Every structure is written in C-alpha cells, then in structure tokens.
Image (cartoon, rainbow, N blue to C red; front, side, top):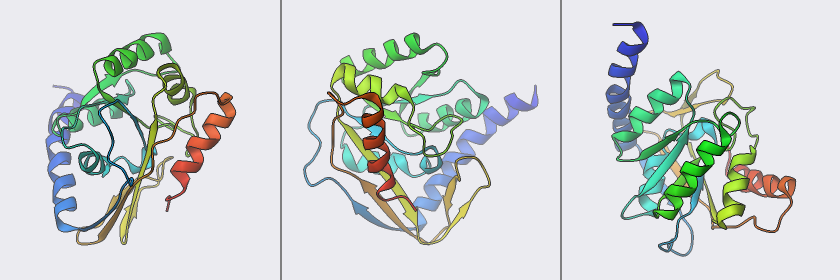
Length: 205
C-alpha cells in the first residue's frame, strides 16, 4: 500500500476525532444572523484557512444539515472530502478553473435538489483572501444568497501555509460568526467579488 493511500485511510478518522475533541474542550460564543435561514439553498462561504470549525457553524444555522462542499481534486482535497463525510456532508470534487463546466453543472444540480453549497472563495491554492469567479457565477446564475462565515480563537496555532491555517488550542474560547445573507445579482463581477471579500474580512483575525 502506498504512503498516500495509508495517509488517506488513517488521517480522516483521526482528524475528525481531534476536531471534535478541540471543539468540545472549548468555550463557544456564536454570532448568527438575526433571522433564521429559510428553506431555500444558500452559499456558505469561508476562507480556506478557516475550514476547521465551519461544520459546527453550519450545524447551528441548519437543524437539518444538507450541504455539498466544493473541494479540489488535489490530495489535500481528498483528505478534506473524507473528513467531512464524518459530519454527513457531501462533496463536489473539481475546480472552477479546470473543468469548470462540469463542476458548475454539478453545483447547479445540487442546488436544484435543495442543497446548500459550501465554498472557499480563495481555495484550493490561493492567493489568500482572493475571491475566484466560481462563487460569483453560482450566486448570480441561481440567484442564491451568500452567508459569510468565520471564526477565531482566543488561543490558536497558525500554520505557515499559504492560507495561514488556524487551529484553535484546546480549552480556548471560540468566536463563531455567520453574517446576514446577501446577494450579488446585478453587480459586475469585480463589484461582486469585493462585496464577498468585505463580508468575509469583517470578522477576520
């Protein structure tokens, strides 16, 4: 068995357990939209470096989670895809840069089936805090509102990766945010990107 296969087999369940243990050990403070999300699909947006605690924010927004996460076909995307299965989340594998039509078609199909879409606008390779075309195209085409999510911790480790990946330290305090839903229909692409970035940067630490 290759090294990659061993990692992809062992790391996801271990990662899931560690994520849950960190979350359980921490104090939580939620800052959520003033109104509950209705039954229509939404785009759940967050920075790539803030993936770790997003499942818990989403489950606060939705009593019956139904979400498909857009994840790259890179090896790290495979690991993320396997981890989120333990949260009962689905994934759409691919890139809106390479094979964009196929990925967008799958995203549109999921929306029509009533799924929310989870998207990292700066993923999978950055640059950090950039907003790719995919999230704008999907939001405009299907007139789907976006909910910008973020978190930070009172104490944390930050990896020296391109996305500044944040790992909360056990027994710290988590501040978990979800903004008011907003749309970008009618905006020029650059205006839409700026609006999405501003919403995500509002609680960035």
